[in-house]
Image (cartoon, rainbow, N blue to C red; front, side):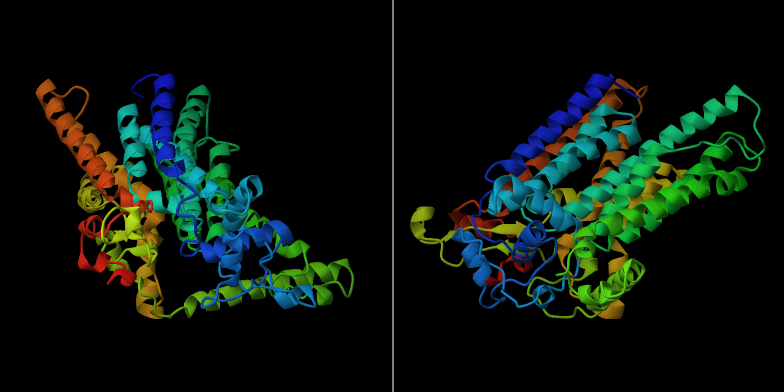
Length: 514
């Protein structure tokens, strides 16, 4: 590892501080319920006050609850004779909404409060990105580059400043991946130490308890407890971790490396990557199990025949709820003006307009027409370069079987390719911001390619200088591109002409502004 331990923490922390400032400054603006905050901010408040999601006043055409919230009136719940009469069917597990609720509990039911934990998760993900990139490249400089690039992504910024679930999904996926990378290093070091310290069988030594893999299982279970799509990462990363175990035993010269991995590593991996995530997912539903007002809870029926029947009927009702949610996601076909197809997401063809008020007064910007916008779009310079970097990683992996390239490609693939199935088989309504869990792997691809461009430590000075100039120029281009887009990512008031100049394609134009 290049550089000192102190520098290895100081650099990433400074980059995270920079990213945090971008995310927390003016976090309460726009002072409005933005896009799907109309669901998640209120569901979080319902969890905080009732333990489960309850039905709110109004609907999409007449959002009474939203208007009351912005007026400071917290009387937003529909009144019902029985608790389960007001149960609200929700399409996502509760953990992400519980995380939003923490901010509401700390700072109140206002835009800053319901966005606080999203901004915190976004900031911490920058720190994790810098640290995992440093671990994978053995370079503090490249680790900090990774954190910087993630902090300068427009989509990451927007989702860090709004109370949606996707930033929490990204956070837990990245944290789980980082834990598995740390487990890979820990397991190889321990394996080598045990192998050298005494005689072992042809299967190699047992590694015992692996805390980093347990932590990974918790994080990936938490990802599933935010959105079901976390299951793709859980399955893929569990297989990847076991393959790393096989490779470690083979690299050590163990004759029965595959049998050793299946005999010694697989049982522990099953506990860490199957049982721990399942328990984490189930515990996130504690509010539903412990109260009478959840959707499909059937509390009266469950409590009618003793403790054993209570447990049986509660589990039965909960599993039925999960099946209902699966049916909902399989039949989500409604048209939305910002829906898009998965093939178009890396190209940023159709972003989502999170916020665009129709009547910004001319006096707000000193021009005949003014605009305020929160545009959910990635930084083009970063995304388009990442496409090239991912293509380069494919060639690199085919040529060298480098584990870092393989892990990065896997993370990108399992976060993107499954959506093609839903597009083809179910014609499902989908949006560009579903890409946020793979943005860290796009950044990792750029970091790994940047390492190749910089060259080895023992490369000629001119070669290293040219590589450093190229990487520095790229980082500067991303910074300038992000700075140019920043006003339409954070609802700054600008002239309509300035807003229009930032629309890279006609398909970027907000429907309300056409």
